[in-house]
Image 1 (tube, rainbow, N blue to C red):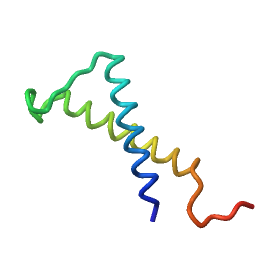
Image 2: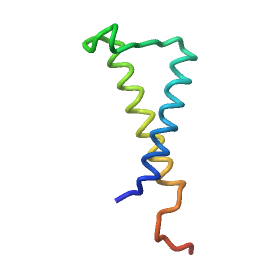
Image 3: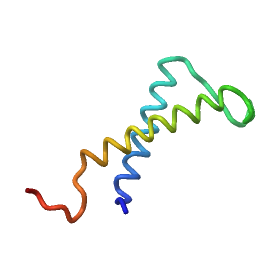
Length: 71
């Protein structure tokens, strides 16, 4: 089981990265006004999933695990 710290940090980093990338490319999606079943929703979910997986994988590799010994 991975620490809650890694999950929390990856969520924060994912949010920032996705917001910055969406802002840079001019992507804007509002679920409340545009609905769920459209291409923008799929792009939004896919970008969150890809960035989240990449950030979580990198954090697991870079942050030391609890109870791990240096050696």
